Image (tube, rainbow, N blue to C red; front, side):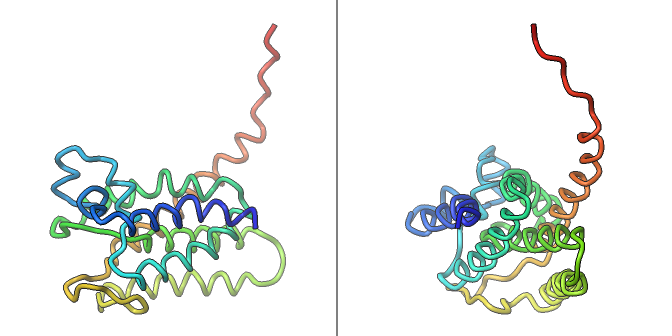
Amino acid sequence: MKSLRAPLCLFGLPALLAWLMPASPEVLLHQRSALFAGEWWRLWTGHWVHFSPSHAGWNLAVLGATGAWLEHLQPGWLIRLAALGAPLISLILLASEPGMQAYGGLSALATGTTVLLALVQLQRPGPGRSWWWAILWLVAAKCGLDAMHPAPLFAGWDQASLRNSAVAHAAGAAVAATLFLTRSLLAPALATSPALPPSP
C-alpha cells in the first residue's frame, strides 16, 4: 500500500484536480503557443489534463499498477520519471510535432513507466524474463499501431477531432529507457566512489 502513494500523489491527485478545475485546459494544458510565450509549467501540467473520464481512467489504471510495482522495486525512480520525463516528452513533442497545437494526458508517462518497470524486471534473476520482453514488444507494437491508426484503442474522447500521439508514446518509452541506462551506467561509479572524509 505504501508503494501506491507515489503514483497517487504524482499522477492520480493532480489529474483529479485538473479534471475538477473548469479552467484547467486554459491554464495547464500543453499548448504550443502558450509554451512559446513562456508558460513553461505546461511542460509538466499538460500531462495531467485529460479529455474524458475514459481517457483519465485508462491512463491512471496503468500508472497505478505499474507505478506502484516500480516504486516497490526501485523507490524514487517514479518521481524521477515524473520530474524529468514529463518535460522531456513535452519538449520532444514541441520539436517533432510542429502541427500539434495541444497535447494532454498521462499516456506517454504510463508508457514510460511500463517500459521502465520491464527493464528493471529484466535485470532481476529468475524466471519470467520472456514475459517482460513480450511487454516491451507490445509497447513497440502499440506505438506502431498509434502511428498507423490514431484513433484510441481503449479510451474514448469527448471530441471526435482528438487523436492519439504515437510520438508522445514513443517519447515516453525512449525517456524511460534513457533514464534506466543512465542510472545503470552511473550505478557502478557511484558504488565505488570514495566516501567523503568527516568534517572536522
